[in-house]
Image (cartoon, rainbow, N blue to C red; front, side):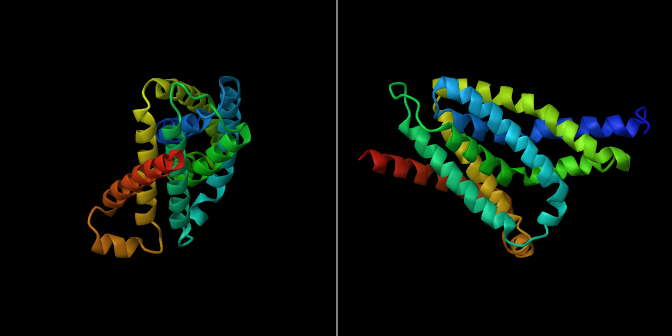
Length: 229
């Protein structure tokens, strides 16, 4: 094994950069899920949720190319993402400065894992593509090391976002809308309908993304107000 091979270090750098650029939405979900917990449990949920999500992402990366060939997989994922966005929106609407944090650490970690699984499709493809540029014997170690290095980045980002959300609740709405936007993009790019969408709906990813973002915010707000009534 030639550790001096430039391709090795170039691929590792590409993996790390890809994770930094593509993990922002994951950090939003983690922060929103952990925000429901008391402070002592929130830190544990962020750590274990992030670590478990990275392990799951490594496994998903290995089979990402084959998974993306399955029709309707992204549609199912988009529906899950819409549901998660609405749930987080409801919790955000229910919370204010006078209400104590609530929820269980197990539920928060479960939300983090489901959301990360759904949103990691583009991430794992980028990482797998970066690793593919390295010598074959280095590819799997690079995936594990590169993704592992992203754990502290996601944890720090989630912790900062959680603190900002307490001061500026509007960020919760923006985060939920982001999940809706990502869901719309997944709908538009599912292999089962992507050709039809491209031929019949100009800028489909943006249109569906905006529509789904509105659905998450409107439905989440309505369900929250209905629960308070």
